[in-house]
Length: 314
Ligand code: ASP
Image (cartoon, rainbow, N blue to C red):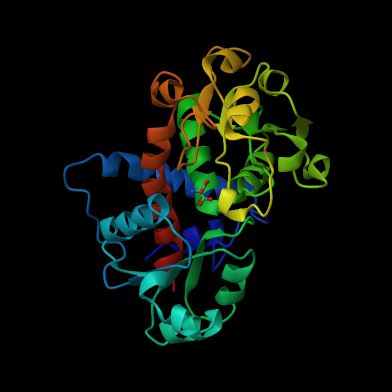
């Protein structure tokens, strides 16, 4: 069981987004996660902190990394983990989101990890159940554990988050990863730039508290972190870019554009990557510049911290 001090340090029942968290709460989760990185590198990775607890991963949208990562995280903490995806569910038979939530709730889980294509759906579901809910990504709204794992990756490489210049590049408009990262990095004192064509920016991008750039070399000039985003074609209705070839030419990250950033700038991408569209394939695999594999590793540790913090107290 977490100590009363742990409840004081993260006094929330759910993790629905980064918005509304304060620096100390983010630091608490990142420090807990950091302690799991070494544990995850041991031969015996299993702990019993969530023994007897039930975790249900309820995914209404496709996922490889996030679902597997939450599953591993729960299992490493000793929880019983059940995966439920749309394909095998009664959603196809017309059951509503709320009915599904009520059905699962009656099975008395301790934590639900939910991904849904509609922004706000996870928060709605959280109002209807008795257990903790973690948002695994809702539409283009938030993906809080992705922002936490990005922050842990950056913090372990750079030693801090405050004062860093971070360029978030690509499909900002449809990206929940961008929204959660803008929140988190802003709360933690980083300086944020977004770099995108006008068609891939939200209408009032300048009101997000970020610097807006349309040119990659200008946006990347002197930055510490380059965070690339996937083109979210599944959320696009209509043409947002002229062609993928042209998109790569102007907005794809390659060695030449990266040369505008600091010499030790770190490259991130949440995955899945479209190689040759958002990022040059050699650069993506260059372990001196890219921390993409490390992001995946940090993902398990971050999800362990979130599950332990929320599931152990329900
Ligand atoms: N995996 C991330 C998400 O679920 C990023 C992406 O799909 O592009 O939002």
